[in-house]
Image 1 (cartoon, protein in one colour):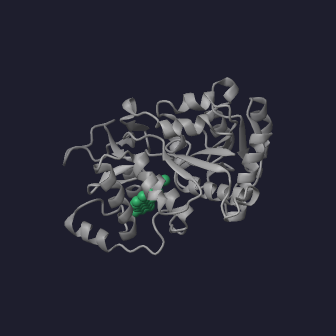
Image 2 (image 1 turned 90 degrees about the vertical axis):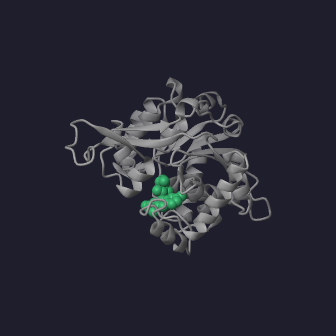
Image 3 (image 1 turned 60 degrees about the vertical axis):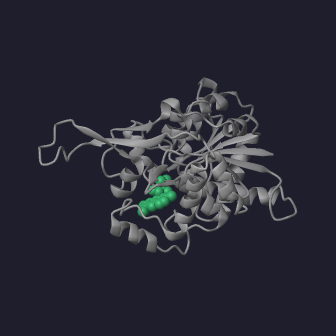
Length: 339
Ligand code: FO1
């Protein structure tokens, strides 16, 4: 069975871990893995060049989590990390002092940047990085092209010393908005710089076309899933695949499960609810994405209206507290696909 998952970072990683665990149980390959082929098409909108290194936060969060090498407290970066090199970089004023590149994490960025400079695509570099770990999932960047998410915010600082110009705005990289400002600056818009010329990779398009099931992970619907969808070719591939498409709500009883999905949804004028996100993705029968939608039991009241709108909706426990609940969620998503 071929399963393709559209995923962002932390939410995507937890969901994929549950999927691997569930398919290892139901489709064992006799060597501790599964006969199912799981492919993740991963958001690259958070990516950036920093101190001469290409950093890919969502690809790395998923790789480290599936490898069991991630810092489960922070949800990003490596377990047992140290920050000696980062301290030196800060002492020299190189990089962002508030965006820590740990020593082990730097190994990933140095290897990736080396391969990119040798002319490999991000897809090829990612394949080399993941060869080292037996992830049980093939990781594919949605595009090899740069399409970095920037956030438009009010320019309250204004030119040096001068009064801020009313209505002036500025655009900062998503990671600056997310990490330096903790998404506290109201986001006026999200744009992907370079999106006009970015194309989905052939591998990502094939993974969608050839899938038996396509799952939309409970990642940020705006800056993770939304960014993947904005890349040329992805929406068309989703419209044409014969696979059922099942989405998992990133919002539980009106609140973002993690991260700042609520701040992002408000910025694009979408209500912070499981129902509103499903409608935002839209029913496939009306040109949208979804055949089916999973929302939490606390949001079960919305199921009837969504089903009437063409999105088969079921209420299941969505809190991914541990591997078993993640596996149960994966099971529910696969059941919704086969229904
Ligand atoms: N998140 C933080 O809150 N603080 C950091 O210093 C930080 C550094 C960092 C370095 C590499 C990387 O791949 C991710 C990093 N993140 C950090 C997490 C990052 O903001 C998130 O993983 C995603 O961009 C949001 O999904």
